[in-house]
Length: 292
Image (cartoon, rainbow, N blue to C red; front, side, top):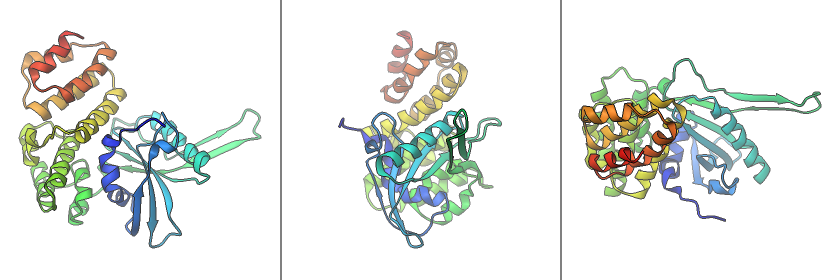
């Protein structure tokens, strides 16, 4: 079996119970992240958890998919996840999709149904969809659970963005362990950047200083950004690249904005996503544009 790099699964691996809490499961007794690659190599869910609850007969299996937007291909991914787990483990898992940001009038489908050509065979699946922008962010912060904090900036709140991010920072600052605090700050900043493009706001979470140069967080940012880029057209992909650069380096020179927005080849834009995440400076990133 090929080695699978779980670095981009940090939130699910470390705070899977908090993610399930977003879906209303609050009585978790024990939970264990499983090796998702055992489901099927090359077609992996974002996460696979074994969970025992006080009210259930567990342990039960939970598949988690995190989607930046409610794209149509999410339905196929969730269907594949459910069936692959069933075929490999003889258990139909609970399936959860966490959708981070709205996109126009698109909505994630809560199920799938199909029938064979003459009707002898039929298939029907359903799953749980959580649209993060419809979750009450104040309830999440009131819980004082650090594992919920990274999702708060994308949840609904009547508070100002500054108030929201300061609440997040206050909760994270109480976490024991320097590495854990730093990771939570960086991951929260990555998610907050999907909604807020203001470097001044993101400084509340530490700004560039919290974007730790570690494989865990670099791969996490790369994967989520890659999902966002894969879902849009050229202009949307260019905007997403600039968002990442602003999080890492602050305001962008106007010439660099124009150079990125001027790119229309989607293959070139896709190649720039890792460059945006991994470049050591804006000058380093410019060298990648020059070679595109």
